[in-house]
Amino acid sequence: MSELMPANARPRAIAAWLWFVAGLIIAMVVVGGITRLTESGLSITEWKPLTGIVPPLNDAQWQAEFANYLRIPQAQTVHAGITLAGFKTIFFWEYIHRLLGRVIGMAFALPLIWFAVRRQIPKGYVWRLVALFALGGLQGALGWIMVRSGLSVRTEVAPALLAAHLLTALFTLAGIVWTALDLRALARDPSAKPARLTGFGAAAGVVLLVQLFYGALMAGLRAGLVADDWPLMNGHLFPGATQLNESLGAMLFTDPAIVHFIHRWWAWAVVTMLVVLGRKVRRTDRRASVAIHVAFGTQILLGIATVMSQVDITFAALHQLVGALLVVATTWGVHALGQRKQLPVS
Image 1 (tube, rainbow, N blue to C red):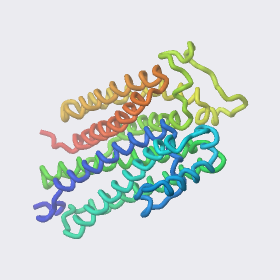
Image 2 (image 1 turned 180 degrees about the vertical axis):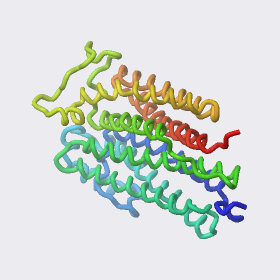
Image 3 (image 1 turned 90 degrees about the horizontal axis):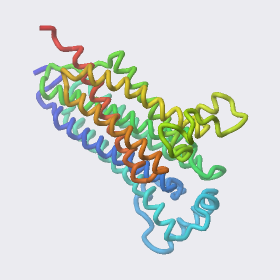
Image 4 (image 1 turned 90 degrees about the vertical axis):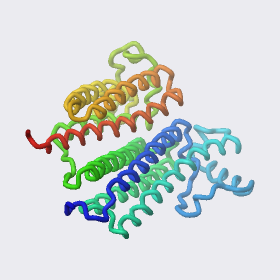
């Protein structure tokens, strides 16, 4: 038995657990997207890590939560005139989003402790798993910081914090998928080493990261509503800035029309990189290549449908779902590329 693979190690079981956690994160990304689309994210104005798991159970508790919400600027502007029944609807999405966060934390922590205590984690993976758990904690902390940004002066969360919150979740998802793939390879071959991150794989990841960042800014700035035509924007290739007297740097990150334009056309840089990635891994892992092509093709079609439907919630939520699946497919492809570099030459 390899020193990386002691007799009591259970890489296959740990990989299966990580795939389950990855599925929960994907579900949370989708619910988070719906929470943003329905302007529900500020409906719970307090952070109660333990007691917050129990929703309001009687009329008095509902009235107290409603009164807290009515004090913030969003309730007086975006949701002006909201009724208790309407409040319960937006409360539902934010509550489910937070509940999923707690479920993910428990689904990661408890099995991690179990495998660690029983010394079933292969050598070199303990600290990687602990780091992934810490990333999940950071993502939760960023979520509360993001919510706080919209409770006083603003009527919505800060777009930059929304981007940080989403990207941390997707980076954690990628790390979990990569680790699960490493463990699956170890289960098949006890002498297998973790895949390496190649230069091209890193470049593909960065190009995708830029697109994901601008996608988060799109959500935070409601930039999808700037134009409902494609490929032009309001009849023009370049729409021009919607905010006057702004610096170039500010326009690149805060102007809805410019952010929309960049997100729309940077997508083709992503497609170019992923087509090359798919071709590179096709001979060694055809399924990864197919997954990459299906994911980015579907994502482009959903992006166009989201814009042309004026951000219909169904298309927008599916766009967010496939975005998370694209991260999984790309991670799979980059991992396969790193494994291919280690294959012996015949």
